[in-house]
Image (cartoon, rainbow over all chains, first blue to last red):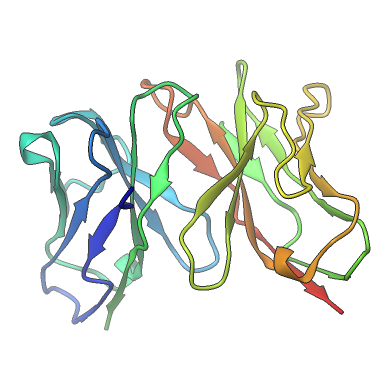
Length: 115
Length: 111
């Protein structure tokens, strides 16, 4: 089966600019996650969707980050305006369901550099 | 606070030597613990989970609730085991499924 797709793979922007990332989960996966991975750290959850509804966005910096999952399939994550500390790899993951037995499958990530 | 600690940033061993990657956790409740691995230029992928109690690629991990540990072990390291390893804990949010990751340990196996 095709894996989780993300684009772009790399993005370089200046601070205060805006940027958007796209994620296409594995077909049939109802749960979608966005994680932020800063260099030297493990991934940290930003937002979790179940179909097209938000399950958890408690760690999403809502003053500058937004995410949506229209029609419960693809998702976009936006940053506006970007700060230097947003430089990180943004990982999208999906799973069939929400129980612990459902494996999370990760995409290749988008590496964002903010200068 | 819920937390996963991997005390070693880098572990270097010779081929054939035993490997133990340490993971300690802090969690109020019954945790679900996982090991994820990222090989060079590949995606993060699940290696094993404690509920399945299986051995994957020769690796095993036992949950020790008394010591709040979930160390990853392999008796004889192979060069292809060189990768970044992340210990993770599930149950971090109200849905019970978001993962909390440790900072990761780079395993380097040389011949």
